[in-house]
Image (cartoon, rainbow, N blue to C red):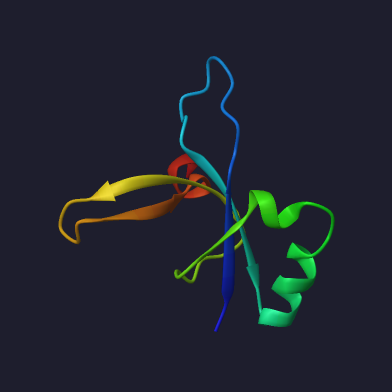
Length: 78
């Protein structure tokens, strides 16, 4: 099981995706908590209940599930 946290990335003028998110995946809750306890990380990151790989994603509404899903930006470029 993976433990994921997410942080919204700031958007700058001219970017195509304004809803970009940085996802970090951890293999254990202890590793995730150690990361969150460093400096002010807990203020910027929040835990999510989706198993994703670390990377940059954007969020899109899925009308079939009536929920939001994260789409890896690397998948869009290939």
